[in-house]
Length: 151
Image 1 (cartoon, rainbow, N blue to C red):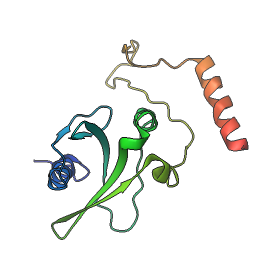
Image 2: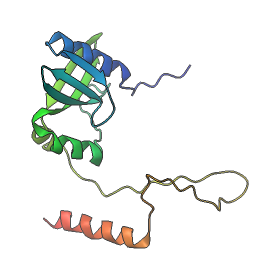
Image 3: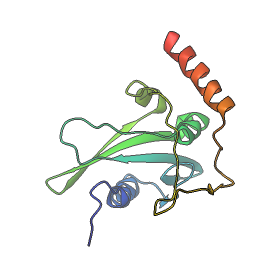
Image 4: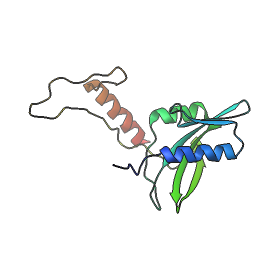
């Protein structure tokens, strides 16, 4: 059996226990707009879990959709860095403004998905949620990134 040491499943479960122990009425793994949605009275809060097994420094990523949700719910959204040492969980919560201080934008990544085998792939899978790469979109991304870098 392969164990994914980067999985955040246990961290999410432990953080839900933490929230319930703090007096939240309910806390659930939701996935959107954040990993965990919790309620205390009539107030709803969102928590995006970032789990690491690293000892001293965590190099991770937050998606643009996570940032979109964070800024749309800024007063009730936290990025949570979760670690487990000697069997005990530690959770550090950051507001979007605080987490922004540790974040930067690398050159944009462009993902691909190509079948491999004996023959060269000729049919690309098109998904309805995917933004298809075009020459024009590459040029727009380059222009935007260069504007960011020049500031």
